[in-house]
Amino acid sequence: MADKTNREKLRVIVSHAQTDVNLCAVAYKMMKACDSEERSQVFEEFIKSVRRDESDGSMKLPVVITKREEANLMSRYGSYVDQKLEQLLKENMEESEFYAKLTDFIFNDEMLQDGKAGSIAIFDCVIDKRLPYHKLDTTSAITMDNDQFAEVMKSIGDEALEAIDSAMSHNFEQKTERAGVVLALIESRERREERAAMLIRAFSHYEKQILQLHERELKRKLLRELMSDDDE
Image (cartoon, one colour):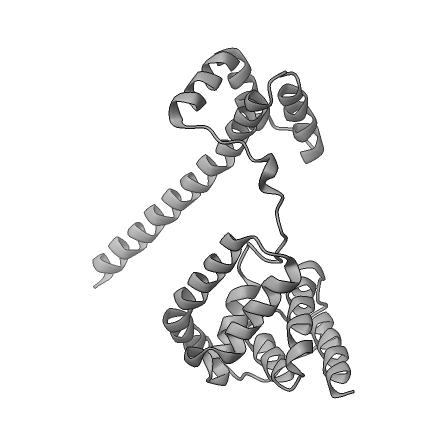
């Protein structure tokens, strides 16, 4: 009964509280009180709900972990949790097994026995873009070495590749318009390897944008530092 009560309480809190480290501290405390068999199910439900459902932000939780503590804890435990996540993700196991192993790690690993360490481990999972976890069917994966990929790109030709670039750069009013044009260009290719290569070409457009944003932010940071030095 206690497990069900904590589960229900956590659902209510997630729907009304801001998704931050202090929500994860509350979740850690509630999960800790659960039976070990139920804990992984509660953890899985928590991860999915905070990523999928929008909170109205009406509930204010007590500050258990300050921003400074959060930064220190992430610095200390973040990479440790990330390494475990990477290990489990590579195994591509069933979803229930994945969450069971991850929950066991968070609540039983010697390094994470402190409540704040466990809370930051949950928070690290919440902000990780690879979660919620899904077992992938890797039988459809296409494997190519560099020479094979270069040959596929050559067979597609510059005209078709440039058409992808134009579609990705065009100022459409709706995302679905761009997606429809790009999809048509990709589906026009008969070979599956060519369709995959054209999809990679479309993805690279966003990679370039992210790189440009990063470079602009670095320039702004450098400019602020230079102006700060001048003031001194």
